Length: 251
Image 1 (cartoon, one colour):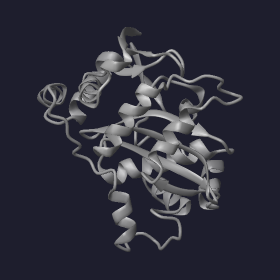
Image 2 (cartoon, rainbow, N blue to C red; image 1 turned 30 degrees about the horizontal axis):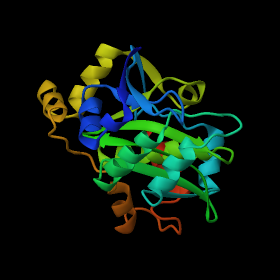
Image 3 (tube, rainbow, N blue to C red; image 1 turned 45 degrees about the vertical axis):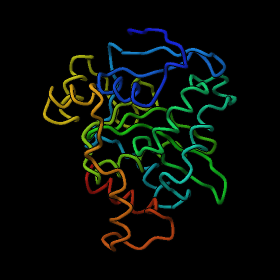
Image 4 (tube, one colour; image 1 turned 90 degrees about the horizontal axis):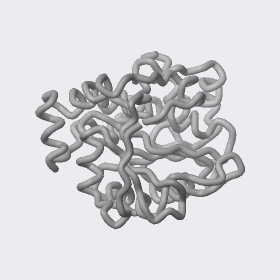
């Protein structure tokens, strides 16, 4: 893994976009560390969107609508929850500088969140960055059983409908592997990234040079539900039952 330390004050939205376009992302050693470092893993975890593993138990959880699933309704709450310490994760790599820059990117339409609710309580979710037709998953959190799995399932359905081609998971974990994630060498990842940014290497160079854009549509699933193309649901944008149907039909 290649890493370079930088001052947190150097972190700004345009720099972060350029870094992701080159296959690099920021992290911090711990929540209170004032510095960040740039990471480029030699082995990259990705979750092929056509290879998502929808287990029987996860399908049942989704179909039962145990959680209310939303997107981009509580971005700041999701990233704050991801940054919180918990019994199974006493420290995190998300420091205030990373929190600030991703909140700014969310306001510019590049960063997005998926939320899982139990009533009015946020019990899980994830957030990440969209660029070209790639989505870079940053962090996920669960405060209720299966909440993070439901959030990933909802994300995969959303990315498929929206025309995304790459879901970057950064580092492999057993949790991600159980959902279908695989590890690929850095050069293979950069090739996929280049294709997802459009026009191969030219698209990568444009994004890295500051011409950042999102060509896929993170909100397509919401409009599909609103148009009546999906079964009616009381859980905007779509219910877990509909997400299970979408994943089952395309798995």
